[in-house]
Image (cartoon, rainbow, N blue to C red; front, side, top):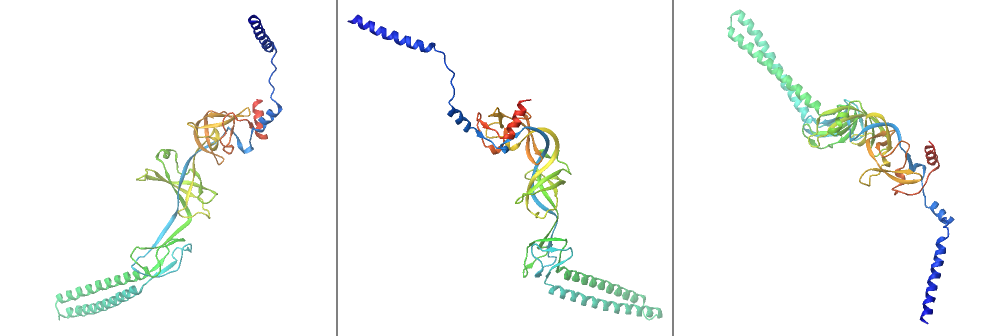
Length: 385
């Protein structure tokens, strides 16, 4: 009985081995993806638009220097009180246009009117004293000739006449000073422009040199830009610039007209003055930013927005045979090309390479892409070369 069981178990084992051996000897058929899987892969491809693809090209690269600062009117002035008095009236307000020499207001001139009258009366009294001294001197000369008085008395009358003459001149000078003080009570515009501020109001008593009005001339406006010391060597008077004022999308032309010979005490920066082309939206004190053109050359460039910086080294997402791959970049000079911010590519990409633009977002490596028609045609043309 035991022998029979042993033979039965051995037969079963041999039968299993034969079955597996036959299956292993059959030729294997290549695996074919079911149609549904292929369709799913096509659906999962990332579809790109024309704006999502850009190309590495050789273009004119203009090296630029960032500039920002406040706009300042070249000509501005304060109307100050030349005498201490109460403001009687002001005829202009902020935004009013004024001419050079135009009367803008009046200080209370009552006190100056009386001082002028007092000075004029003193001058009249001095003139009368001079006339008396002159007549006395004339009479004494006749008396000396006749021998009635001594020459010493004539000398005394001559001295009296000279003193009266000096007193009259001093009185006349006091009249002119009083007249000037009276004229200084009138507020006059020193330059043509627009009223920017009213720093005092009618009824206030102001001291000498107190600021009452500010006038700015917007026909000439400059940008005061702080330049770092390391950028000064490349900056030249006459360099062209493009600026944008906060709150406006328009760009305005400018040029460097002066460079301050001294650095700021705190920041150690040097102020460059850029003359801005007149524009209706420009106002004194507005903040503007832009760039100054330094030099221009042909270079291999890529839009600055396509360079990714979320890793330790800058990189770009290159399109390689319909899939994405990350390419580490070696960057050079940053600048402008046709108004677009670009950066020079020293290594990592070649001319004609297609990369994902910033509008495509952050795409990992190895993602299948569905190219737009124009970009696909360009890629096919590059592959056929």
